[in-house]
Length: 185
Image 1: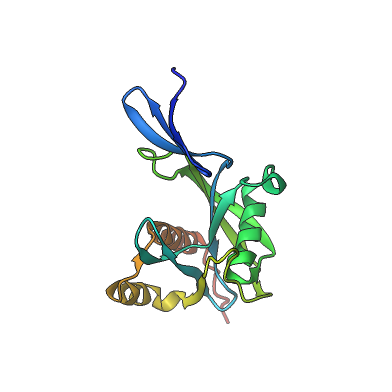
Image 2 (image 1 turned 90 degrees about the horizontal axis):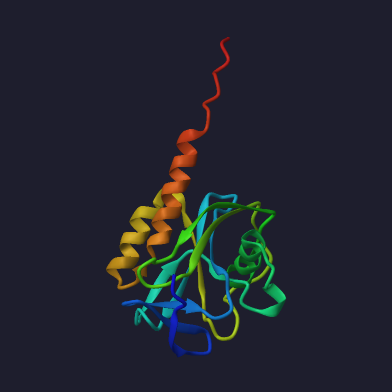
């Protein structure tokens, strides 16, 4: 296997070439963590923000970069999920559990994603992110999520596909729950 050729190095990203293949790698990170968070009142926590590459406002799961600073270099995906959830949404979680990991976009980047479920939510602040992220927090009732997402799309927002992945995982988990036998009188 050949060492990749560096075509360009930016502050956060490196453009690499291996053979005929060009791809992007983050300079100082181990991946991206996406947070599946449902409030005690059964609302999915989503964030909305303007994304320059998409030239649009997007609806996304709360997320952040894993290990991108010296202080977070050894952070676990679960710890990153708890930190980013509070920073972006103002919700603190009691426990975090890794649901899955895999490539973000294997034809474009070497980055891995980690989808983490956070439970035991309680509001501790306003959220909104840091450094001018200008994040809007949405708490969307799961019973109305599909209609709400369609409405947002009609209004011009882009919905990150990981929102649908998270919803599918929630549905699968719900279907696997054992039913309780009813007591006979």
